[in-house]
Length: 160
Ligand code: ZN
Image (cartoon, rainbow, N blue to C red; front, side, top):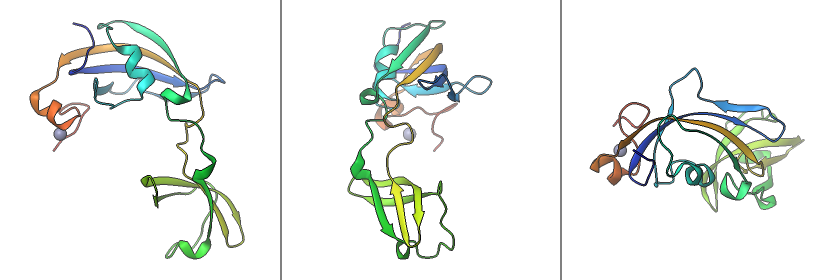
């Protein structure tokens, strides 16, 4: 069986950045399970997995445009401390959910100067070339309900 649209795929992966630092890995944990063809994972990785079989290993380089996007300067904004009602202390590195023109998104505090708080709404991996070491662990057909929902049910997926 090969990976195609409407298959449920289990992979082990290790994600490293251009400096070779490991950012994320499923090794030693449960594999990542996703529905192929449903935008469950980033586009560059999904495209590279098409046609692969169980036991295949691959290395995938994903450019920002096929990953988490380029860094967008307009997502970095300065706001007044009064916007954070009920938050006593605001420190660099804190994350909040914020209403943006692109919907509700996590934003990270990147600078605090008096009452001026600078927020960055870019994905932490935006602008980075990502290297994935991937091994295909399991492939099965998706159920009708999974296709309807656009995600995987059961082990490694949604429970509802
Ligand atoms: Zn569901």
